[in-house]
Length: 268
Image (cartoon, rainbow, N blue to C red):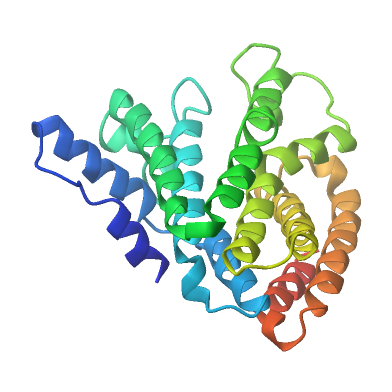
């Protein structure tokens, strides 16, 4: 369902202006429709169901979340950032196409994400506000800037930084770089489903808890920050416990949110 909605948003609306134009759309689809868990947009649909609405109501928001996530990965892989040649078992966009196209792909996916939110009708303004705040310079982009800053301007990521990073600073980074978009994904599901503001706030808290726990688990699986492995595991248990409590208040409609929280708890 999510991929079909993304595919619909990534069809050129008019005739090609030239070879490069068609190549751009091809590269955008390559980035957004490649292998991946689709966990963030799946949480958007699950949150919409949890508040008693039909998950189809949240499909534009789910597509927006995944396209925005894909844009961040494309730009994160660029030589000026992490300089990665492979993503999800395939060449990264700047390798499969070229660096300039990769920049345009990220820009195109970002703008397409906000265009998709326009389909939410009376809920569109609230959705745009949430995604802009979470994905902007106050949170997600701030996290990337901090990550680069830990490298002391040497082009290093936080994993390779030549100085010790405290656990508190590390978790603040996880909250910005990963938690912010998870939080937006879940809250957008509530907004699309017409939930009350206080319910949307609980959904945002759920998403943030899951997102930070997800990143702690990812660090452990990658062997990053082994000095914090025990502390991170304990913190994951706290975070997933909070997520379980928040999900249970939705009862049977929130069963998928609960299942995700419980699954994340098994990774602690």
